[in-house]
Image (cartoon, rainbow, N blue to C red; front, top):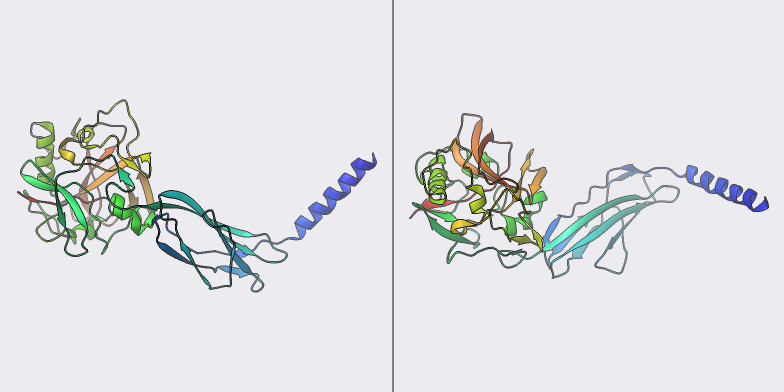
Length: 329
């Protein structure tokens, strides 16, 4: 009976102490990208707690470090990520006497750019070109009457990498709104689309360019406004992996062959001015340079659980999709 009473008293005291603590007020707005090049440095600012207005200590810990870093309000912390591929966690905490801790957690994946780094098991074409604007290389392949990029465009003047991580573009390409991708210019006809963000001599593919690709893959002509049954599966690299995880999950409804080494990547899509990202390892979205009307433009998409390559349309400044560039042979 004594033991029980003592336990109750201890619990009561503990509960009372807990009730005397207050909650901090404010938004800890440090930002660390979800995908970062291996071995690179990221910086973050400790700030955001408004109540209490003084006596707040900010602390940082990381799974790849054994120490704890303390930082004053407005102080900048620098982290050098490991130089190998991996997934790590960085924790940002605010502490003050008499208050519950406020905690912000970041999951960070380190990546190595290009095919053969974080992106593996993708068939490589024999030809490639260098974009003179930023010196990036892209594999290319002749298909039908055109030459196509076999990788998603990663020109960083506009758009965003997946999860607003610029470095993700070195593996998956960037996502762009139609307006950003084309410069707001619609196009039609074979290899007659606007240059947009593509390198000189290349253009954003029109509906006719997509039809030319479909005919080469399918073996017979297909209109753009069609679901393109069994075309999507022929453009998927089934064994492709991103940091060791499959980009295209297995589906009993698809038979991926990656015909012509076009190598569609399930790079996802985004909405709301590059703020909300979805569909990584599920969807591949690709713009057409051809508009539906003054407000909307066409795109095509592949889903991992479907063999088709259907079309749809979206407001020009809403959806963020991938871009493949084309030119005539």
